[in-house]
Length: 119
Image (tube, rainbow, N blue to C red; front, top):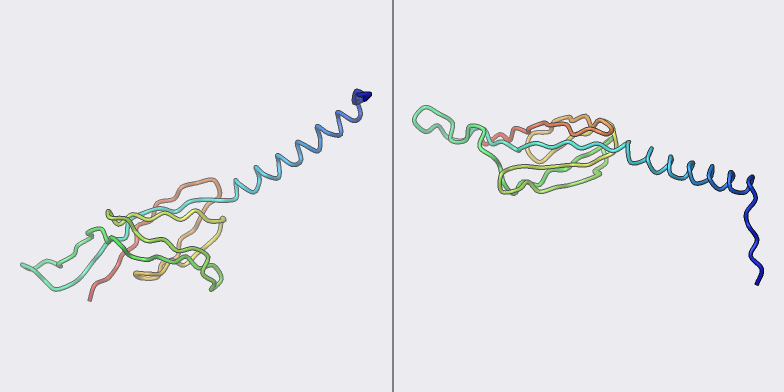
């Protein structure tokens, strides 16, 4: 079997194709961002003149992120009330406690706690 070396223009074409492919992968990955925080409980009956829950973490709460009215992701808060969504950049409404709007910025981790009212 005879092996033939690739000429210079063939190598250049291969290099350009590889760079375009890698640039496309990098661009898509950089359009993701993360929003993280803690679900905090507020309200409940008064105990010694204070709310029963005054910002305590809320574990085990299912939070759902919606974009343009469509659910795109759900998470359950951890034992410490923490949550984390990694989503495409944009604006989302997170429900599960009080509905809040969060903005996901490409390539960033944004912090936003969520207040959960207790009757």
